[in-house]
Length: 394
Ligand code: PMP
Image (cartoon, rainbow, N blue to C red; front, side, top):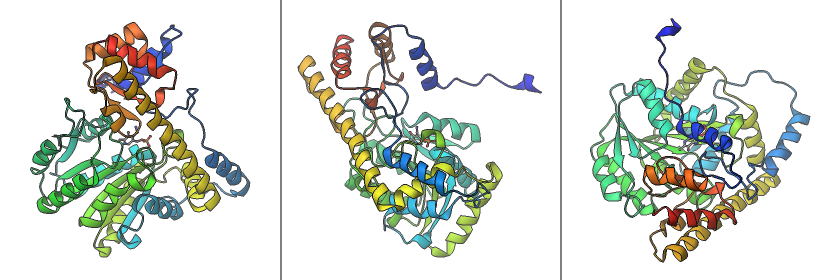
């Protein structure tokens, strides 16, 4: 039977990490994988998370199963973090999932059950795993224009024209903030225009929010999601705790199904429970419990929010330093977009050949579509990158 298996395409980002590890050069810069790194290149455990771990070790008395949707306290805390008071709690069904990826996967599963012939509209470009999961599940999808390669900003007219084609039963997948891989985001009036269009077409929005707190702040980054959730009849939201709590390997995420008909909540909740049951029964609990502790203890929460602010500001500082350095070296403003983008990533707009030149001649590793992880930089590597970018004719 195994002889029928086909070689699966390797994950390009993981392959790039391997190449980086094998590169013997002393001066090399890893701007590939989407993991936050501090100025010394470490991915630290956040202070509040570490404290919560200690407290949990003391207080935890059992490892018995949780509920199928995970610990309800986790759902409550995360719904409040993502949605604030945009919608009544009674309108939200939610289930813990293994990471944001698990939430995305479960959301697509729900879409397939609820709308078997529906199409998923995905931004061009989007996080490659969106496409890979959709392909694997046999769900039809179609790209909508999103990124303007010239301005490196959102091609909003193109986006709206393409999304006008989505109809009832279709799903429009949006990034809540800090778009991966481009770093280009909608402003609030653009979110409002998207909401108006969704209300007109009847398509269902699904929002993937994996970087809340990495862009303009915890509240600001959730503004688009909250606007959508409070305006449309129903939506799906996949949230990840991997980045903003720094608990990548604990696999912590939440899928929310929001309906403005509170009567639908029971059916939605039952469906989310059912989907967890079919795929892995009970979701992982350790990370979810840490997140709940951090969010519900005022002192831990304040410390976490302060550290998250440090992380966000350090990325903003690197963006500004890189944009300024590039302006100085190139004598042009064409890299100003780096300071405008938000989150961990920016798409540079370089050709695959130029990306290869950066790797071969300068030991600088970024994804082939020229996505760079800003957090892979530090104050002293920014000038090295800037010089390499200009030398490579980008
Ligand atoms: N969505 C997007 C857009 C992402 O960039 C990521 C992380 N790379 C995720 C979801 C999921 O992350 P995780 O499964 O690690 O929580």
